[in-house]
Structure formats: structure tokens, C-alpha cells
Amino acid sequence: MLENYVSGKWKSGQGDGEPLLDPVLGNELARVSTKGIDMGAALDYARRVGGPALRAMTFAERAKMIDAIAKLFIAKRASYMEIARDNSGNTERDASFDIDGAIGTLRYFAKIGSSLGDTKYVRDGEPFALGRDASLQAIHLATPRTGAAIHINAFNFPAWGTWEKAAVALLAGVPVVSKPAAATALLAWQMVKDVVDANLLPDGAFSLIAGGIGDLLDHVEANDVIAFTGSAATAARVRGHQRVVELGVRVNCEADSLNAIILGPDVADLGQFTDEIVREMTLKSGQKCTAIRRILVPRDRISGAAEALQAALTNIKVGDPRREGVVMGPVVTKKQQTSVREGIADLRKEASVLFEGKSIEADDPERGAFVAPMLLQSNDSANASAVHDIEVFGPVATLMAYDSVDDALQLAARGKGSLVTSIVTADEALGMNAALQLAQSNGRVMILNESVRAANPGHGVVMPSCVHGGPGRAGGGEELGGLRGLWFYLQRTAIQGPDAQIKALAQNGAVLAV
Ligand code: NAP
Image 1 (tube, rainbow, N blue to C red):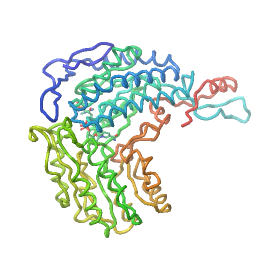
Image 2 (spheres, protein in one colour; image 1 turned 30 degrees about the vertical axis):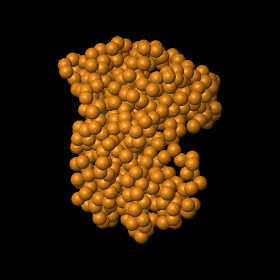
Image 3 (cartoon, rainbow, N blue to C red; image 1 turned 180 degrees about the vertical axis):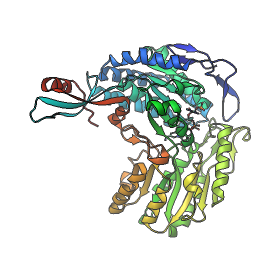
Image 4 (tube, helix red, strand yellow; image 1 turned 45 degrees about the vertical axis):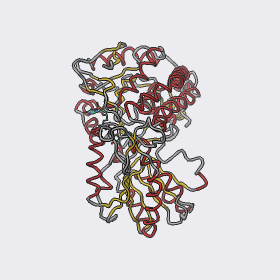
């Protein structure tokens, strides 16, 4: 039974708990339970003990602490890779994406955090006079919120999800109460266990809820913040939770997204376009919030694009990640496998199958939660709806024909708010114009052509220096973005008063130059 780390102690939940399974072999790895855990006391401890300890530190001191966590994870990386394989069915490539993503993000925030120096609060802008002379001045200052940061994460990134949020909250000076998704909690649990054992954080600065959410949200207070990542349905429940609404608790949601890629009419060589799509469909078996779900192609290029994608997908070996040459593993649970199959059935009502992988390289393919890659083609792009509404969280994407660039941009916007859309084009005017139009419905837009091919980390990669999130269906949230990410954890206040005091306060504030 994985224990919860609350009120500065490891505590077991009651009962049998829920099993965590190996999605390839089906065997049980551990159990989680939060039954009987006093969630109110856990939050109170974070606020009362962790918060003051963090706020007593400067940004530079907190940055150093974050750097120490990153260094610890680098030393333990090999053991984390094994856990990711066992509990999430990750290949090396998948596990690296999650674990190295976590380490990279921690290191990034350690570095930019140290640039804030020995300051404890933030100054937003310069002091300015309010009255007819300079005696009364005002300054906007932002101080760490005195509540707890409740982090609720999705099953697909137990490492990155936990630490991309924690890095920013801890740097801001706010204690974290982190809840990984139950099904894949083993990796997050082990990482937290290692941090606690190494004594890298002040008491109360980090708590772990390893299992169900229980009544955690019934104990929120006005100064807490909630950063949620998961499905749009759960996001709506979190946002609509009665106490959260009544107290006006600050909430950030990162939810579903039907991300798109557009092939520009000018592109003759499909290599870059195909590489991008195949990587997005197969990395983490398509279980990435940023993965490409909709592929928009000029109508007269559809058959060429279909052929190129089919040929590339044929080379993807699916199976047990322990086997040599396997590129794509299973989805995380049998439940997810069922959900992906149901989603495919819904998409197929409006689309035809262009490619479906057949062979699974595993001792017992039926036992594992395998889903072969599938490429669909929309029968009628203009009138299709499922492809714009249903996020199938697996190795599945749908080709759609467009008649003009405007048509493509309108189709992309039918995702009702996405995390990211890419356009492949060497036409500079087209790329820039499309980016500005796509910006309204996307948190991130990528213009791709040969000039950035070597430097491109990938459509689905969330860079800690860039904002992550998207409008509408994608949750309406925004995380990361370098030092911009700190704002969520800070309370900005306009302080008005005598000239000398306002200027002295301003002088001691860090400027978030991002
Ligand atoms: P989920 O079912 O919505 O669960 C997300 C988290 O919410 C889990 O930790 C879950 O706990 C918890 N939860 C469940 N019920 C809750 C409630 N009533 N109140 C508060 N929290 C509750 O999502 P998932 O299946 O884990 O993740 C897949 C989804 O996440 C996909 O739709 C994907 O697009 C999205 N995602 C988005 C991003 C992004 O950055 N936008 C990133 C990754 C994933 P339990 O596990 O204990 O049920």
C-alpha cells in the first residue's frame, strides 16, 4: 500500500484500496487508498507549517532547493524509467518524455528563479503618482498566497505533471498538496518519497495524496489555489465545486484538446509533416494532451498524405516495451483501452479507416491494454462533428480535406479551444497570417518548415519557457511560460501611500522579466 505523505508524516489509507497494474502483464504493483486520511488537516498543515517556511526564503533560496530536487532525480533516473515502464507501459522514449521533461522543467525554474535574487515578492511596473503632486504614489506588488496549492494531475504524466506544477508553486513560495492520478501514481510516489528521504524541502512544503481525491475540495480556503489537469468533465466538476465557487478559489484547468496540424498548400515534400504526425500519434501511445488528433490537408493532396502516413505507420512496432525494437507500448489501463475503443467507434460513424496496425509483440496481447495505431479519414469534413468533439486519448488521428486556407483555419477552430495547432508551410505570409488567426483558439501555435526542422522539439512538447494551456474546451487555463507561471501563485495588490515608503517597497521587489 503506497502511503500518503500528509501533515509531515507517511500515512496509510484504510481498506483494500485500488490496485495499480502493469498494463502489459496485468500484474499488481501496489495499491493506493486515501480512505480515512484527514484532508482538512493535510491542507491546514501545508498552510500553517509549509507556507511560512517557504515564504521566509528568498526566490534564490527556493530556486536552489528546486535545483537540488532536479539533481536528485538525475541520480535516480534509471529507477524511475523502470517504474514508468512497469506502471504506465512506457517505452524508453515515453518514459524519457515524462521523466526528463520533469527534470528539465525543474532545472529551468531553478535557473530562472535564481535570477530573481534575494527578494521575496514581486514588483509589477514602476511606482507612479496618484494625486496632483508626487506625495501619494502607487505600486503593484505581488506576494505569495498564504494558502496551499492543490495540484490534481492526469494519469499520463505522473512525473512531469507533478513537477512542472510543483516547480512553479515552490518557487513562488506556496506549499504544494499534490494528487497524481491513482492508476499511475507509483512514479510520483517514488519521486516524492526520494525528496522526503533526502530532506530537500521544509516541513509541510509538499504533501502527497496517493489515491482518490476524497473530500479534499470540501476543505479549501479562499487563499488556496487549485491547478487541475485532466478531462474536461472532471475540470467542470472541480470548477463547479460548491465550496470552490462560494469562496472564489482561484482555479486553473488544463483539460482535453483536439489539436490539429495543417498542411500548407505550398508544401511538396511530406517528410516533415509525416514525421510530426507519426511521432504525435505514437509517443506515449497517443496519450498526450497535445497530441495531433486532426490532420487538415488540401483536398487534392489527401491521397498522397494518406499514402505517406500509412507507409510510416506500418513501421511502428507495437507491444511490450521490454522487447527489442518496440516503439509503442500499451495505453495505461484496460479501462483506457475500452475508452479508446469506444471513442474510435464514435469517430468511425463519420470516417473510414485508412490504416490500422495489426500485430502486437507481447507474450499475451489480450492481457495487455494494447491499442494499435489507427488513421481515419473523415467522410465529409465540412459536416463532421465527432472529430471536433471527441478526444480519443490514444494512437488515433483523422485526416480531413480542406478547400481553402480559410476553410482549414475554420475547421481547426471547431475544436472549441485547443492547446496547440501546427501549420507546415514555407510561405512566410501564410504562416504568419495563419498563426494570428489560430491564436484565438489555441494556447500555442507552431509554424513549421525546413528551416526549423532540426531545432523543433516537436508539436507536442511543452517547453517550460512557453505558456501551456488553451482557451475553451482546453480548460481556459495557462501554466508555465517562464516566470509568467508565478502569477497564478501570487496575490497582486495595488499599494498606495507616501512616496518614500512606496519607493522603498518597490526597490525590494523582484521584476518578472520573462
Ligand atoms: P481525469 O479522469 O479527469 O482525472 C484527472 C485527475 O482528476 C485525476 O487525478 C483524478 O483522480 C482526479 N479526479 C477524479 N475525480 C475528481 C473529482 N471529482 N474532483 C477532483 N479531482 C478528481 O483525467 P485522466 O483520465 O487522468 O487524464 C486524461 C485526460 O487528461 C485527457 O482528457 C487529457 O487530454 C487530459 N490532459 C490534459 C493535459 C493538459 O495539460 N491540458 C495534460 C494531460 C492530460 P483519480 O485518478 O483518483 O480518479
